Length: 185
Image 1 (cartoon, rainbow, N blue to C red):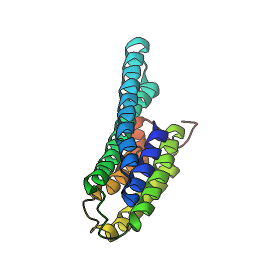
Image 2: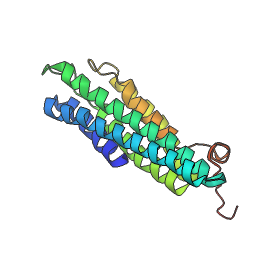
Image 3: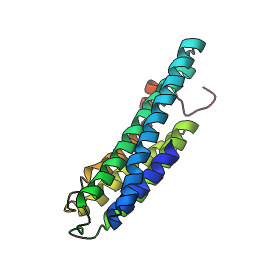
Image 4: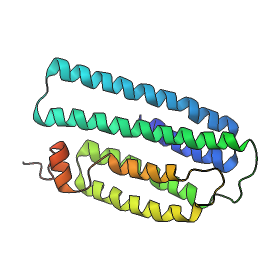
């Protein structure tokens, strides 16, 4: 699911840079696959809860996973939204070339990979690094506010969503998911 999202982010921004209608269409169609994966994972998680009755850490991990797949699916919607902006351009040139947006997309893709890795490995140090990158991405985006028809908040939301894939502070990690940084606990 994360790999599909990574490709969708890359393709959505590339479709906007090049105003490639075909590529935009692929991103929009691919969003349906991400949506289906979310619902499949949710169904499996609910089935697991109902049939296995997990407790404590296992249950918290399943619930956290449900939250993560929801965030990833929402990010897929953002990619589709950017692709729809490409379609709205109908071949008209951008008012100015995208300079910071591709860099923001690269940063977001990196954050996504690191956030998912941090979640799966329960690594709070990586989580903190992702949070720092979210701030960096917000600064980068300030230079692209005038891009015609681009709701650039979608790119900023990507970073925010990647940030949401995992808790930032140790207290949030422990309270929200029951994770601890010391594996002996």
